[in-house]
Image 1 (cartoon, rainbow, N blue to C red):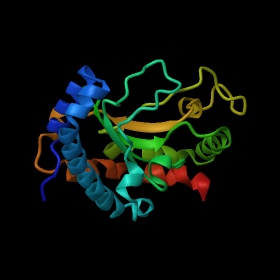
Image 2: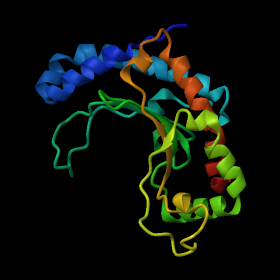
Image 3: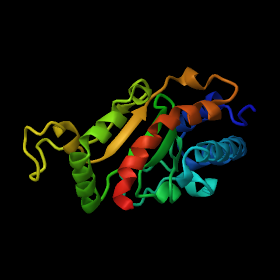
Length: 221
């Protein structure tokens, strides 16, 4: 099966939107946007199905609950551009509103990203995550040092400058305990999507993250 949407075409449209980010231009090109968005959402729906084959937490998700709208909330922002210059979505329990570890895809000119984890957990959850890593270091390191992950992904997290007060500064897992979030990302080149079926390719490359999600989501069980 081939993909319904062409990521190069999506990126080309988003480049033009970035250069003409105003309501008049968008209205004039709304038909083009609608067609690209519909095809992309159909592919995202199939991506949900492929990921659900190896991760039960994704099973039954509706695509509308996973993808983000293109319209920006500009009420409290100094950037008054009305539209986002990217398509993105979260695959995890609760879709884009999840507080758990989930998969993320982001299609933006010059900033393609895929990966996942827990974004900015609230303090009680972050404390539980650090305690889990501290209690199960061997299991954690086995997961994050798996070549199937390290060949594709890198940590992309905000971190503390100093260790949390609960842990010694010379803790062997200091680099992980200082993290404020637990996210691993892959940033492929644009030609990554120059294939007949980008959906299957992305689903295959997201699969190595499943053990990390299982580990991080243990704090919610």
